[in-house]
Image (cartoon, rainbow, N blue to C red):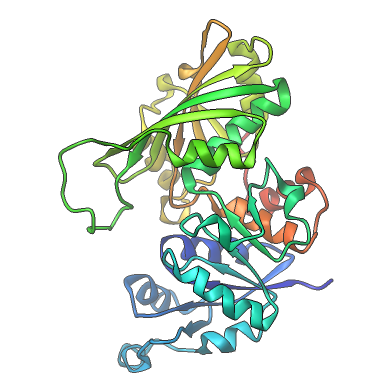
Length: 342
């Protein structure tokens, strides 16, 4: 099999990062990205020298792009004629409509967390159920919070066995640069259980999960606290050892200056990561505590970038490039340079 030809539908917060991530995969070829309007992201793409070909979806006004001298490679349909799979990061609901096109053209697709589960054959996570995605045509990723949450729960579950988890999500209210949520000075609580707990049980049905979500007026990352009940008692040292071995978990300490979500965002920028992205979830060593037979810990979710590795895992599964979760995730990690700091 030659390189897998990949297209990205929607060049927004996630689409930009998907394009960058795919471009780093040596066994994949990014054919291009498709979008509707000359957004700031598209303008920046042009100013960077158009590293990726741009295609326009139905309804786009090409004259708007011409006015800004933004090169256009063709239409969305033109892009689809060249690809093996589409990473659909369109606004919620659009992906389901696009699926009808993908079906007609006989190409595979991977949808992001904003779509309903019914859009896909498999609700997918690279570590928890990679094998279920093998040779499937339509996969859907978990949300950013669920993706990071499952990484840590799966890490403990495979090592020790987990029976149930209770989570509290302190959720950022909008991404950096977004204004649609308005200017707020309040916390807002959602009805329990949160969808992340329900989604975790969908991916990992052997675990009983529940959770509460609180919206907070910040933009750089969510924080999740987890109380996990093992089949047998899990000590702090056992949990810490397991977390430290996981490539997509970055264990940090308060004493080193990692005081919260902003510290991790700043550290990613200091590392020189594009857009201040971090693929790993941050997990505070200081937060790992034993409570009877339960283990408790807290993680930081870099919401803009955390789902990118699992999306690339999904491409690998869809084409069976690697047959196991260990091989698939390892190859993604290699090309994205994940876990090299350990």
